[in-house]
Length: 243
Length: 178
Image (tube, rainbow over all chains, first blue to last red; front, side):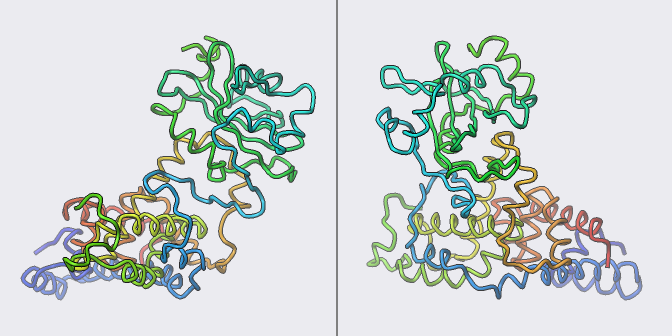
């Protein structure tokens, strides 16, 4: 009598009912190959267990105990929040969130805005990209941009309202990450987060998972479908980002 | 499943866990939740973030849990769904920044010893498709029965079994039999 591998697996996992179990055992007694296969299934289980069981005896981080007691600040319960919300000391992001024009004058942006030429402007209370930032948003392609360009374009995508939007990181005296959407030949900023001063490790950039929450959640809220691939990005540029 | 029920309320019916009971049970589950999350997420820091997210969601949905239901399976399901959400969200943002050299800097919590065997197993597990990885983690690492694991993954037992079989085969190939 032969048994398929799923049956042998189920036998090794103790999942067979008595009759089949007895049949497998009878077959194993006369067929060493079957017995060996079962042994392999068991060995894999014990190998996995001995790899992961040590986690059980690790001390539980205090923040998890607090979360289990409901003490941690609840995240938005129903939405995806980026992991590593606190990327340790290396990269902390005061969150500006969806920008109100008044925030522009905040101390955080103040020093940066005083620089000339400034890469931001306002009109009618809307924050717009200007200067080098606007040029990069209009011209740079994620796949071909120089690694040392002061503005790094991230992902480009269509929003639910059909506009083209792009994320970027701007590295100057301070580092900023943001998201801008193209509307009537202008790049309107919808999210901006400032990094802590510059901790210049060569080529240091935030990892995907370290994306500032304000920018990540704006992205998640705006994006319709999937991001543009390289071809769609180039074609959008060719059409001057007009839908 | 009720709506608008505040966690821990309507104790009069005796149907629901009180807030403190639920919290105690979640705390008791923490070691296993961390182990399960580690099997899914690999990176220790990511895994703990995932556990935290699952705890927050579980508490926010406390009105859905019943004392006679298996709490562990319910929270495992929440944790796995949070992981799937995170994977999708990451895939969408994959091109946002260049993570290569940085991922190494930020990886790990620095707390685990660099255990070669653990690394090999984690590496192999991480290469499985999510469905197979979850099946393997629930049955082989967490010791759930096929039925319980299928329930957590919201699939028929037959589907769970074939995912488990494929995952196992792939792992045996990667890790070498023995």
